[in-house]
Length: 257
Image (cartoon, rainbow, N blue to C red; front, side, top):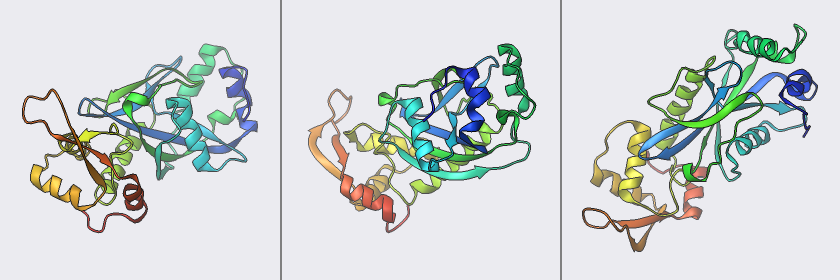
């Protein structure tokens, strides 16, 4: 990887090292306080919010690029990562963002600067443990923070469309593949797992049917421990059987729910 001296150095010389006119945008989902969260950046010298994004080195696999970008923004390496769509609207890029930043930074860039070109972007979504994330801004941002998916601020370019497409894909995958290992702590209760599913799907689920269905997949292990300090009967704790969990990820559930 190339080390750049500054953000401006990156803006001026990055085109020598990255694939032209293609980027990666990452929708990073976390689960906290019964809310589905999305990690967003505030754009430096412009205002507004955007998704964690980055570029692909010319000798780099796109999945490796996505993992690198996610690690830089979250500090995590063991991340569930899924490519879900390519966004190619010819009008998706807003040159005013880059031009405004150039003006404020007093950067004299040529009109054919690599960041002023039309970009296709590859969308990835990631599932992470909220408590383990060390949110870190990039060259182009001032901060990196979590936002409730139901109360998102105005977003740059087509990033709201990207988030909605990622959420739609996650909801679709949830019906055929296990979800939870990367979003929940190692030990959790059945109500906590149900809360996660209800939050992602944005709908209430029948408690008995949910428990019966989840247990039928064979990916859960009921522990001897119980959750302490709750108002009602202490629920048992569960953990994922990782061998069966990853097998279900590879092969899918035998029956959707």
